[in-house]
Amino acid sequence: MSLSAVIRPRLIPRLAGIALVLAGLLVLPSCWVYSVEPLYEEHLSHPDPDLTFDQSLVGSWGQLDDECLWILTIAANQQAYELTMAPAPECKSDEKTTRYEGHLVKLENHRFLDVSSHSDEVCDLCLPLHSFLLVSQQNDSLALVPVERDWMSRALTEKKVALDHMRSQNSSYGAVILTAPSRELKRFALKYADDKAAFRPDSEVKLKFKRR
Image 1: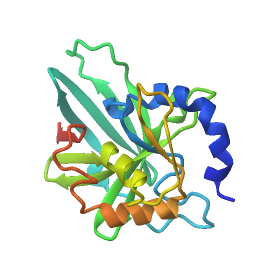
Image 2: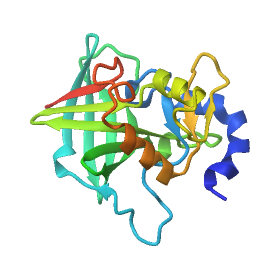
Image 3: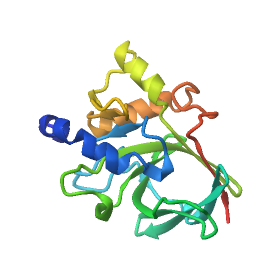
């Protein structure tokens, strides 16, 4: 039995708490696609061969959100990443600094950053959900593109995509929570990586950064 099958009944009463913890993931809107399982396989006898590491991601990146400059700092943690998102000192923002854990997954010629809240950022009654973002990097530019939530919702409803999932019962959040195992998430990500409807290059929630 997969972990997702065990967690499923326990996930329902925690959805509100999960959404509150993760709604601000990298300062993103709460209409989001989350996953109980990561995009990489954790419980193998050896590291997942699709895990990779790219030193060029490490550093300080700036994103302009309205009139506020947000700083994404990516640090190496062995073969993984620690991400910190914070408003620039001159920003007039009430948002606090948040931390995340990241793993880079390479599926053929596509790269995805699997991101989850840092363990210190997750409340006792919440589950550390994952999001995976399609990575596009060129020179000093970095773009992280999430799965389009509305597209995923329709694809699941119409059975175009067959992945175990749940939907938030809190209408103010509307998140889609995938409960499929990692190997199925990989197949999905690889199949739709080039689909501009699934991973929209012009998405309003695409994270576009410039190296600082």
